[in-house]
Length: 104
Image (cartoon, rainbow, N blue to C red; front, top):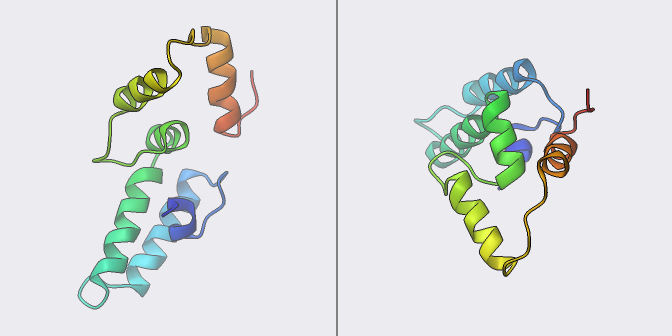
């Protein structure tokens, strides 16, 4: 499930908004009464809690404990069947675009 949907935050939410949504949901769904929902909330928060983990999720669609970014990239390049990977500037532009940021 999409962690943005689980926490109810937009894709461009900052760390403070993600944390506020997380704390509100943890209070609303205590682990004693809603163990599955609480686990989904924690997993979503781990994927979005800071800029690095959020960027990892946006780029590789992985969450903590899942496949590493290198495993995802290796699978992608195997799928591309020996296509040449993009140069650094193209890759940087795609990363920033995916993260919803402007180039500086």
